[in-house]
Length: 444
Image (cartoon, rainbow, N blue to C red; front, side, top):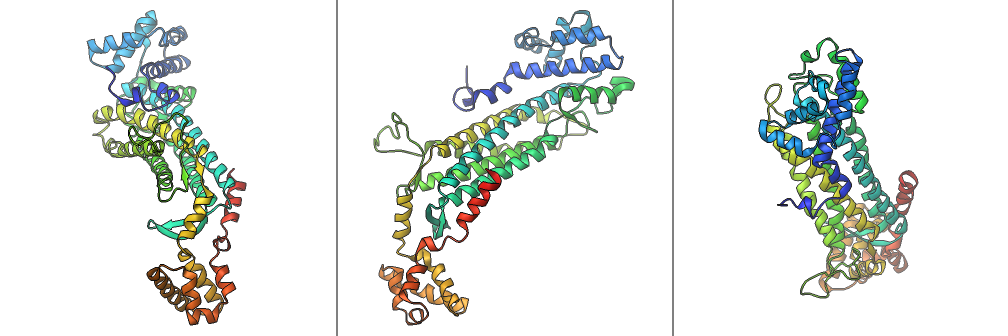
């Protein structure tokens, strides 16, 4: 019986494959084999034993089915792997798992999974950034309303909006690069971190095994890798998800009927509503928002897994079995969907212009104020004059220009031509285009 929506609705195959039972078992076998080779290198076990264990350490030989059968019998997941591998390694099986505790194997195997998973997330972020930069370049001069508090504000360009988003993604890439070596960490130091069961070569065995596997190791640990590392991973993914929801929410708002400045692509055969035949809904962006909330929800269990008792307890285990694959699979999914949205986004510059015009000049009040300051008025006096004019215009449902021209103090300071220039959105974009160009030069 399939219950989890990840099995049939959400997630992409490459990321989901990393967390399959086969993939998990293979990485545990890889760790056991690397441990055996490290032991052999330092003379703890015969070289032939390491070779036998390595040959047997494959999911085609040590199967998921056999491990599951053993776990049902003995009630211990890692010991089931150890027994299954020992069975296939012949007489050399007596050296399997020598000196190790369960989390030496599971945490190091998890580090291997996380390395590959973070590689996918990094690729996702790069692709999203690229899609946003394409829009930034294309629309570097596309003028639109800025909006603050849900209200119309001074004009910006759509390209600048996309450049802002692209830089946010770039910061996530930087955070990922910084956190990577802290997250992808294994261990091989035994039951309480002393390495006692590994004998005199304990530190050498740990270093060699982890180095061969390509992961860092805990320089000092209890029985487990520090769960602050996984907490950092989940909070980082939650931050990424929050940005994705921010971007998707912008699309949803711009696609609102009364705004209509941008919209998701809509397939030729796609259906928006089962009853309202006219509908074209931003369903992918809405899906991104919903999945982002699930990813962020994993922050709480991730943090609560940090304070384990003494050298460790098992309260983290169940949460991590759910949390780690779900957070990474959903983060990958929502990032891929976000990229698709922005790669195929429909942008409507004419509607942007129409929405600017619909404000009847109100959004250019700041521009007029600055023009008055340029004529020698104090900033506060200019602000009050323009504010009063804007209020009169709104009350009379008239263009701001009419109220400005009718105001004696304003008309004395500014000619009609100067007022018209101050009311032109194209004249009040500041450094928007230059900012976009600099971003493109530096990050594209």
